[in-house]
Image 1 (cartoon, rainbow, N blue to C red):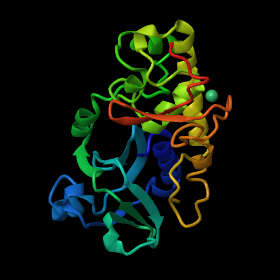
Image 2 (cartoon, rainbow, N blue to C red):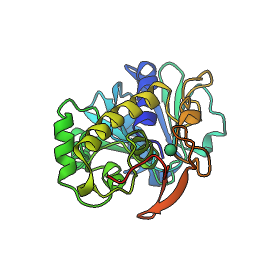
Image 3 (cartoon, rainbow, N blue to C red):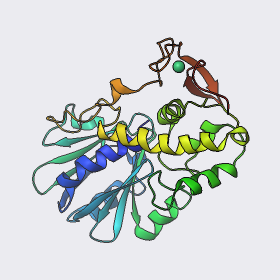
Length: 272
Ligand SMILES: [Zn+2]
């Protein structure tokens, strides 16, 4: 599932392509992907200009000039393609937007994901429970440690809880723990102050590096896009069971934590 770096890569690449563009047409091939009747959705979008694209957690918000927003969550398997033509037949895409410059935005793989048209107020309401962005200026190291101190349970469960922090999921939860040399299943009350400091620094450095590399999703956004997915072969621990730890040479282990995968190195990631 795309996380902070992947969604921010989309935001960064889409902004210069979409900002100021007018939607000429919206085609809906899967009614469940949207939140109103397809005809009403298409009619409401026709002629609307996209002002800018924003990311909130793992969501993208397309701000329209009528005060409405399109709220996108790709969930598992969702992806975007932009260009005059799609790599596959049009009916494989759940929603297609056509713009006034002839380009189109294709929304694919949205079986669990959604694209909702919402008023500004409704969009805020839907996102109100999201925790702070990892790069929120108000989220200082002290504020991060304070939030963490109020939690019980396992570290990774907090890091990937969207109400605690927005944008971190299964992959980067493990990557951040690896970078901070702490096990994902460490008990939060046991964490030392030094570990919490390292976690805060690792959270920002891991996400910054992954976004600078274009995230791990290997599907290009446009036919000429060679940036997206550049981080895929730079992921250090996630999905690397049995491989050598890039830090100490130990063997990377896969275990289950609250029903989700957890990758870690038993030799260099500590318990507290
Ligand atoms: Zn190791």
